[in-house]
Image (cartoon, rainbow, N blue to C red; front, side, top):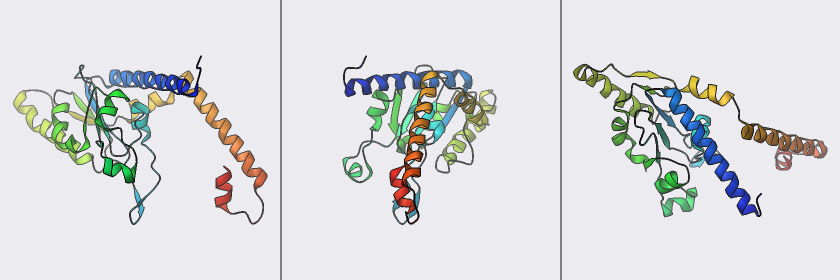
Length: 225
C-alpha cells in the first residue's frame, strides 16, 4: 500500500530496479564467457544545431533504464566482481543549463545499479582492459559509428596477443539474438504496462476522432492526442 504519490513513485522505482537487475543477470548468464558492449543512442541533429527528440536505444534501455545519450554499457561475465560497467557523461553544471540534467558517474552507480561508472571520455582508454580475459565480444557492428572503431581496435589488440599467450582469439558476434529473445518474453509488470499504454493510446485516438473536422490542422490533432 502506498500512502502518497511520492511513496508510489519510490515503490515503482524499486520494481524497476529489481526488474532491470533480473534482466542483466539473465543476459550475463546467456553471454557465457563473452563480454557485451551495448551503446546508447546518440543525439541526432536535423537542422543547424537543433536535435531531434531523443529516443533511447531499445536494447540499451531494456538492460539499464538509463535515458541519456552517448552512454556505453559493458556486461562482463568474466569479471564477476564488476560485471556491469557504465560509461556516461559526467555532471557539468554549465552544460546542464542548456542540455538538461545528467546523472553522472555517481548516479549511474547509486540510481541505476552499475558496479562501476566512468566518464564517457575514458572509454577508449579503459575498454581493452575490461575486455581482456573474455572469450568473445558481443557487439552490433554497423550501427554505432562512434563506438565501433574503439571496439574493433580493442578486438584487434586481443587478436594480436592471442598467438603469444596461447589463448584462442576472441570472436565478434551480435548480441541481438540473445537480447531480442529475452525482450520477446514479457513478465507480469511489462504486460501490465503494455495494456496501460494501449488503453491510453486508444483513449487519445478516440478524443482525436471526436474533434477531427475539415480545416483542422495536423498540429491541432497532435495536441489532442
